[in-house]
Image 1: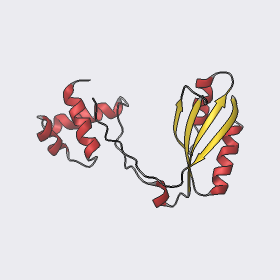
Image 2: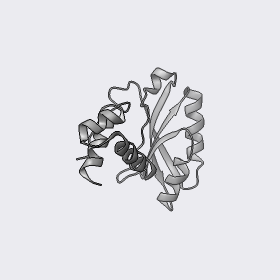
Image 3: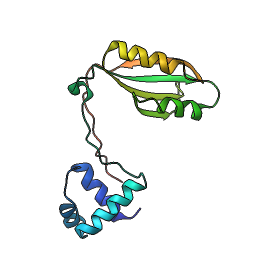
Image 4: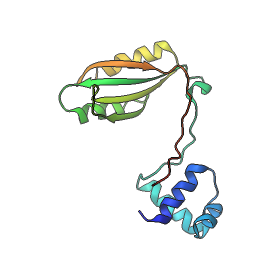
Length: 145
């Protein structure tokens, strides 16, 4: 990835609604060239342009991180967990857990249902739940280094 594409990404990280014309001015490209590069970055899954929200402010009463210990094929287990609609983040990790998954739920009953569903996924040995009580920071503007 070249420096111009990185600069475009950084512009969008600062403000995902920034116009292609404004980005072009900042990085030295035409509006059309920026539009093409952004589309290429999205199509290649290098980036997504999305609205980041606070789930609690939108009425989701429970957000939790689950530490998952697995048996067998960790990658396959993680892929099965990642396919669940309530899971918005899923990674294979090193440490006490094999997989970390974040879930967003409407209420306690919904959280219990998804934890039960995750526990029934093939390859899941045990789970540990960390319920979010207060979102203090959520940013996606770390740049491209």
